[in-house]
Amino acid sequence: MERNIALIALFAALIAALGLIPKITLGFGVPVTAQSLGVMMCGTVLGARRGALAVLLFLLLVALGLPLLAGGRGGLGVFTSPSVGFIIGFPIAAFVTGWVVERWRSAPLTLVAGLASMFGGIVVLYAFGILGLALVLGKTPIEAALLVTAFIPGDILKAAIAGMLTAALAKARPDSVLSRA
Amino acid sequence: MMISLTSPIETRAHRWPAGVKLLALCGATMGLFAIQIPVVHLLVFGCVLGLYVLPGYVFFCAGLRQLKVLWPFLAIIVIWHVFTNTPMVGTVIALRLLSAVGLANLVTMTTRLADMIAVVTWLTAPLRRIGIATRPLEIGIALVVRFTPALADKGSALSQSWRARSPRRANWRVILPFTILALDDAEHVADAIKARGGL
Image 1 (spheres, rainbow over the protein chains, first blue to last red):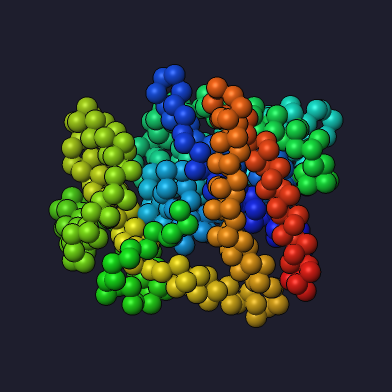
Image 2: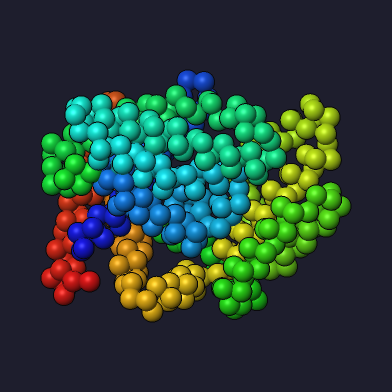
């Protein structure tokens, strides 16, 4: 119990700390932050349930008014902004990512965690994100999808990094990678 | 960094109960999405601006800074609706966005973290009554508040030592040792909580 709480809280803090890393700008001018990498890692390292709880705890603190989102954003305004879909999708993305890593044990962890991050952190997350954009901006989901396609290459890169990091963590701290414990 | 987004400028709304403010915000946001009349949205937005102006110039500027992140979305809305020749629809969407985010930020700016946490404690009271412990949640909140700046410090120490060794930028390569530090911290914290009698 204590260990679960500590890992969940530390990963929530990790998502916040990753948001402080200055954003890098891809060749075609799209900013990429490390924060969604943290969400993917919650799933790949902590597993479905604990990963989702870590992200929920992080979002609770954002809602309570701490500036923990990338770029120092936070507070209740985030939940009425156009990015609300992505915010709501975060815990679900972590859950799905973790679920895939927990179930699919026949392939190398790098590959599994990378593909799970792509499925959870891109397919599932963008489904929620696009719906949120469509709702707040009054557009159709397809129109909203066009607005976010530019961010997908950066997220594919992050999913690949999440895969490599998870495998490396499983070597360095095998007991702490709960998704495979 | 861990200073919350609450405004240090004491307004009258700081003293209002946080639960009431949150409930009013829910109602207002739902109302904003139900209304489709441009004039009403203009009036609402005027009122929201008025609320920002009331506590004074510094508060107003701080509020505007928070709203500035919306500009890419507003730009998209303007371009889109000028192109599709639907300026009225665009006006409603843009004003609704500004009012909804503006009001929500206003609640955040006028409510202290302790008051917000009190609302969470109140909301989770029914769980305690049916026997579900909410202490882990309270400890979790405290741990995140404590460890975010601690982890951020460790992260910047890692990238500084990277820069001392390499002419290249550290970027994602420090994330592995960074995550290992977080995992080790978590194990130490778990031991510390157990040593103090556990949850």
